[in-house]
Length: 334
Image (cartoon, rainbow, N blue to C red; front, side):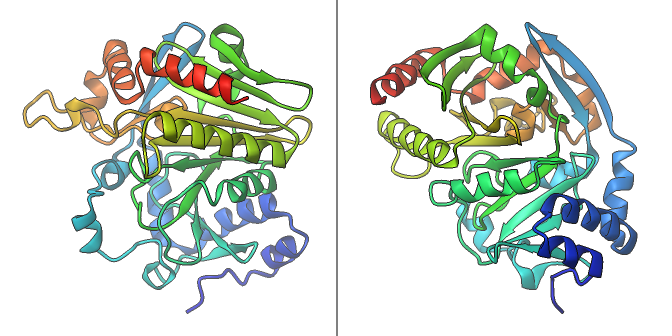
């Protein structure tokens, strides 16, 4: 059985390279035809949320029981080697259909959603999660489905539940608070690394999160800036493997790309690992850092406080001293 959707309307939209509309149409079709997806979105109706206001931004907490598998996923090498890859074509459910993108990626509906419309953008072949060679692909994807969706990337050591298979995710624009709060955060907390008429490159510390942002209409400028960041950052923290980063790529026709790169120190906070009643099942990745912090257990959602959110975020990000060193190194690299 082929994984590719054969719906005539979707095929026409793909031929016109209208991937945004094709993706939205795929979602509607799969909800009608694939029971697992229907069930997954039915579970979203039971989601509870509450919001914590910080200085200039908010973090939402979401109780989402459907995310228990992803949040608690074992991502060590042994566990991965002992399971089938759930993103490989041959292991997908028979009813799951997707859209081939640029003969490299398959756009699939995610049956364990956080976003109201949630997608996994998987590489055709079984290759490890790696951003340095595929960052330009992320930019292309985020542009081509930008009418409706934001694209995210979770590093293999900080949020990817399938670190052995290259993939991105996508979901509704403005679902994550950071989509709309970014400019206020940049104005209040941003420090310029480099800026001219064509490129804006900033470092931002809002008290909880530490990240850099790249904004430009010029794709090559965004790619070159990211590559320079990646090398400088990797050298500074002495990483030979991919450094711990999560990315959000947001595209608008008038302004171009805005890429946010969250700088991580840890995958999961200490409270994830304790074996008593103080344990909290939380595993921050790009969506959480974008302002929707997911808790798959209701007791954790009920007990979470603003102070706990603050402690979790501060623990998993690089500290202020390291962030200062990163800022100085990046300024020097320009």
